[in-house]
Image 1 (cartoon, one colour):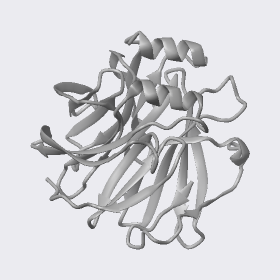
Image 2 (image 1 turned 120 degrees about the vertical axis):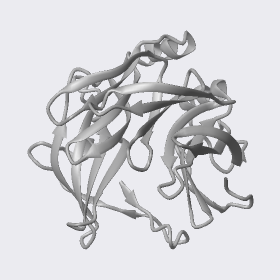
Image 3 (image 1 turned 60 degrees about the horizontal axis):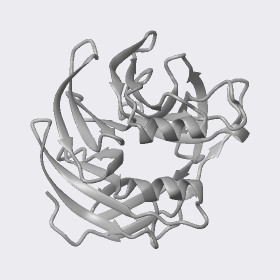
Length: 285
């Protein structure tokens, strides 16, 4: 886990200190999705991280909860969450200090079975909500949901469907169940979603060519795959329009997985490759 100062993007990201506990082994920690809850009154950050522990075939996924100590640049492990509803967890969106939505991107865990699940577009996965006590499936029969995010104020939830090539918009009910209100098609396979907390607009990292991305994941050192970032304009929770912010054939960055704009600078992360920053040279929506 690394910390990057977006006010000084030329500085190298700093690795955060993480210490093992009786409940958590830092040596087998394999982080995936991440969500942060900021408590401005107490001046602290709660960090939830999807973990696929190395070497533990019995546990494909679990969620770790940390407290961030800014003085020591350290993540302090608090507890973990594990449940049979966690198949292959891809991403999560915290709604409080002990509650979150999460996506299961795959039903199967073996590489060949996962490949067939994606190629055959099997609707075997779901979105789950944990309220601190109970895990509830809030949408099911889905095709590889990846990133999940929430609108400022928490009225809407956005889910990126990799295989279906769309962003699904849900209205969040008072009991935290989800009501689908929009499906926005994309010309690419979406990975993660970031929300501009001021405007509510979305930044989405895409894989423009799925076959190249799948070949790349099988031969990371010998293949490249394109990267793309788009911005989606949102009005009253619904997506109204889109524009491309970034495209690369794969030489600069392969397999874009997440992106965010801060003060005119675009930060693009990848699944296995580089971290890239560049100035945005088009007007934002």
